[in-house]
Length: 369
Ligand SMILES: NC(=O)c1ccc[n+]([C@@H]2O[C@H](COP(=O)([O-])OP(=O)(O)OC[C@H]3O[C@@H](n4cnc5c(N)ncnc54)[C@H](OP(=O)(O)O)[C@@H]3O)[C@@H](O)[C@H]2O)c1
Image (cartoon, protein in one colour):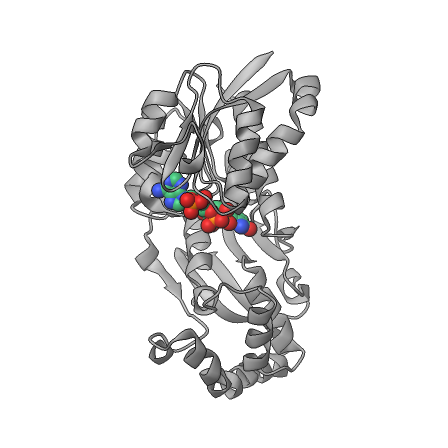
């Protein structure tokens, strides 16, 4: 049986769901792919379990999952050693054929990912941050089209879940590009939370009411400004634009958030209390859009060399306009997909769907040179 050695950064919601799915699919992967995934190292923000020779036993992996589910550090495990240098972990734990999987939410993993690539290891990211710092880091991480004679489809890095979670957005983009198709426009909604808000606004509800409801239901981050600011969507837009070969940085993405700068310094409680001040503004935007047969969506648009993120009026008859609720959706317009765009829609978040997307990337790399 082929062994696939894996080093995992991050055992939060996505990382734990990934480990669980790998354990639960052991028989399936053995039967279907003659493949066994072995964990050489599991890392959280403070500690790591390392077993470079055999890989961790399933019992040890279950113990690690139990600790993390209980909110503890891997340092509490008997094998747990402190980790303050992920590249050193990759150095110690790695072996030929290894896949380094980043399910953390920090750009601090970048040096370790590049170290792994230099060693000839493969990389899978659910984490957007290393792909949205300097262009040079993106080029080195993905090698997507950056090296002559190294087509992007042969890249040994996968980052499918960074845009639209498990939805096949990056794979579709790369397939279109590989065929020589010319993508002229990408427009999409990549935040379930903001989709929920836009649906509420379209139903005629006040902005403050929908935000408070989403907050209460746990659909937003504890500080809703982390969603309303649009920065996470901007990272996804940048990854899409860079996927087209555009050379842009985060500063080049024009982001319009859903609250004014003056509300940035308020405490969460004061911000929530001040929300009704924004109601008439958003009611006006919705009414203006409706007057011309449009609806308001919080969209990322990549077109004509520009990358924009914010509330836009789209035709109520378009795929984006017909969308309601928390689904993600992307319209890709190209030479072969116009005037009707290629459309991908579905759940764009959630730890299980995301982990499944990461696992698909890992399995694909098992069979990629
Ligand atoms: N959740 C989704 O629906 C979704 C969808 C698509 C993509 N993603 C992306 O997937 C990633 C993981 O999401 P999540 O929801 O699982 O996040 P999370 O619950 O916040 O987990 C983050 C994990 O990363 C670990 N970590 C932090 N700094 C680290 C470091 N320097 N080295 C190693 N590990 C470190 C944390 O360690 P501790 O346990 O010690 O804190 C934690 O285990 C994020 O980048 C997110 O944007 C998530």
